[in-house]
Image (cartoon, rainbow, N blue to C red; front, side):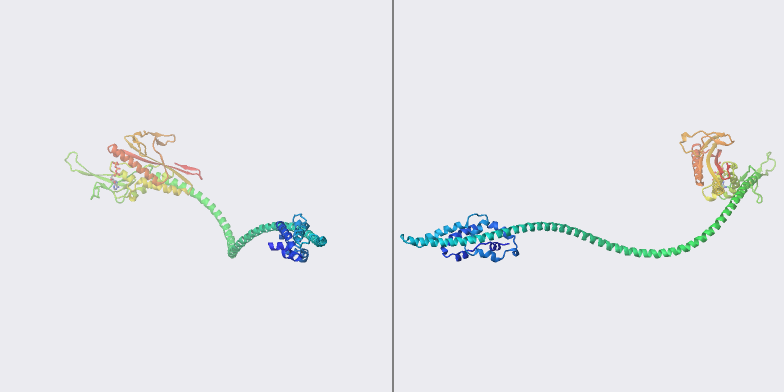
Length: 512
Ligand SMILES: Nc1ncnc2c1ncn2[C@@H]1O[C@H](COP(=O)(O)OP(=O)(O)OP(=O)(O)O)[C@@H](O)[C@H]1O
C-alpha cells in the first residue's frame, strides 16, 4: 500500500474544493488552515486501517466523495474519528467574526443597516451552520461506516492473520513434507539404483542358474549312468565279498599251514644244523700280504676237497746224519677257505646259523688264530661292500629276515653289546662316559642259565645302520685302548653280542 491510496480513501477535502464552496473565499482561509493541521496529526492512526483494505472492498466512490464537497469543514469533521474531540463548528464563528471585522463599515448612526447586515450575517452563518451540521452528519455516517468497515477489516485482518498462521503452519508442514519428500525421493533414487544393480545381479544369477541347470541335467544323466554302474558294481562287490570271505578262510587256513610249515622248517633246519654239527670249525687261509707272492708253498689245498688241508714241513735230521725229510700233516675241517675265498663265500656258510638265531637258537661264531691271521678281517671286514665281514652281513640278514617274518605275525626286538676281554679283564666297547669313571665288569650267570656282564651297555637297536654305528664306536674304543695299552690287540678278544627276542602274539609264541 502507498500513501496515495491512503489519502484518496479518507474523506478529506482538498483546498481547491473549500475555495469553491465559500462565497467570500477570504473568510474561509483560516478555518481551512486549522483543519489541515488536524488532518496531518492523526494520519499515522488512519493509515494502518487503510493499508489492509483490499481495493475490491472499498465503498463506492460516490458514497465517500459527495459528503466531502461542501467545505473544508469536512477535514475538521474527520477529527473525531481520529481521536480529536474538538467540535468542528467552533471554528465557524471565529471565521465569521474575522469576516465581520473585515466587512464595509456603516456610519455610526446607521443602526438599522448594521442590524440588517448582522441579520444577513446571522442567516448566512445559520445556513452555513446548517450545511456544516449536515456535512457533519454525513461525516458521522461516513465515520460510522468507516468504523464499521474498519471493524470488518480488523475482523478480516484477524481472519487473515489466522489464515496467515494457518498458511504458515501449512507452509512449515509443507516444508517438512518437502524435506520428507526429498528424503523419500532420495531413498527412492537409492532404491532404484539398488534395484538396477539387483536386476543386473539377477540377470547374472539367472545366467548362472541356467548354466547350473544344464550342468545339473548333465550330472543327473551321468548320475543315472553311474547309479546303474554302481548297482552293477555293488552286485560284483557282493560277489567279490563272498569270494574275499572264502579267500580269507583259505588265507587263514594257508596261514595256519604256513605257520606249521615254518615251525616244521625251523625244526628241520635246526636238525640239519645239529646234524652238520653243533660245533663247526672252518679254516680260512689268509693270502700272503707280500706283493708278488701268491703261492704259499707249505699249505696245500686239494682242488676236489674243500674240507681238508695239508701242511708240508721239512723236518731236519735230529742226528744230522740223515737227509732232511719232507713231512705232511693233514687236517680236516667242516669247511676250508683258501686264500682266494671271498667274504661272501665265508658268510654263506655262516648264514644258515644266522637263520637258526632268528629261529630262537643260541648261535655263537668266533674267529681264532694268531695275530695277523685275519680274524678281524673275517669278522668285521672293510668298508667296501665286497669286503664286509661276517658281523655286518649277519646283521643285514637278521633285519631282512625279521622284516619278512613280520607278515607272519613275528615281532623282534634287538639288543646289542660289545665287550673286550684282555687278561681276563672286561672292557665295555660301547661305553661313552668319561674314561676315568669306567665301571668294573663281571661275568655272571643268571637264573635261566643266561650269561650276563654287569654294568655293560646293552643298546636297543632296530636298524642295520644303528648296529654299524655301534661297531664303529667299538672300534674307536679299541683304537684308544691300543694307544694307551701299547698294542695289546693280539692278546685280546672282542665279543659282539646281539640278543634277539621274537614274539608271535597271534600264536602266542616267543623265541629268544
Ligand atoms: N682274507 C684276507 N684277504 C686279504 N687280506 C687279509 C685277509 N685276512 C687278513 N688280511 C689282512 O691281514 C692283515 C691282518 O689281518 P687282521 O688284522 O684281521 O688280523 P688279526 O687276526 O685280527 O690280528 P690281531 O689278532 O693282531 O688283531 C690286515 O691287514 C688284513 O687286511
